[in-house]
Length: 261
Ligand code: CO8
Image (cartoon, rainbow, N blue to C red; front, side, top):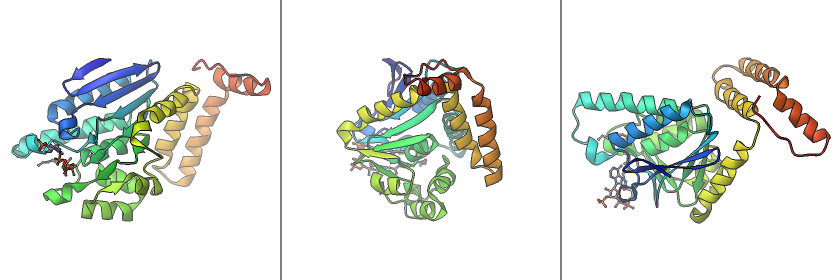
């Protein structure tokens, strides 16, 4: 276990890294120094081939209850602009990590907390988790990508209602809208999330990376563009040692041993 900040720890289980925000007394609210530490961690992780899956989680009933409102209520507009630039950079780094990223949402994921989850490849949640973009209630609007990423993940109508009302949304509703993929009792969340992470970490690395690339970039253009990206990725995989191993193991009724080439 490694402490990266007063409120941030990393744990590793083989190829799975677990990044936990430990600020239960403020429901995981993000101070600027915490965002900076999270950002430095993502920058380092980007070049760390030992980690294949990143699990992000919080503590108690707080995943991340958004920006630390106490810290930011009195900042100057220059400081606010600099915070916006910082959070955009950190969120984009998370979104573009080569590893598979899973948000294990244990409790409140509000404002910037929901936006962090929306940057991840997968979101799994505790039954008690509550998501929302409540910035409108502060006279603001989501500035960490919430309007854009929620509209892309759940559709423009769903996002419009969430942004304009700022209401809390429970895990089952977000599963129905496709943002959350699995919902578990709070006491089981981390075990189930780690199982999922380990399952993905056990899949052939190049196929996982190509699948992430296709799923992420394929939707940016039209269907024909996406189909081309998919076929090109499959062609790259077809000649790999891992594809030969996977097919050979299936035909010989044995477990495959993937080498990442
Ligand atoms: N920032 C700082 N402290 C927080 C935050 C937060 N975002 N959220 C909760 N806390 C603190 C509370 O102040 C409280 O502290 P204390 O015990 O010292 O009073 C502690 O966490 C526990 O919270 P509650 O007592 O309120 O717990 P409840 O179970 O009654 O309520 C809620 C939980 C509903 C989650 C409630 O705490 C809440 O509404 N929190 C605010 C959530 C929010 O609005 N988040 C969005 C923030 S805005 C954002 O992320 C975009 C950036 C905007 C920049 C802001 C510039 C002004």
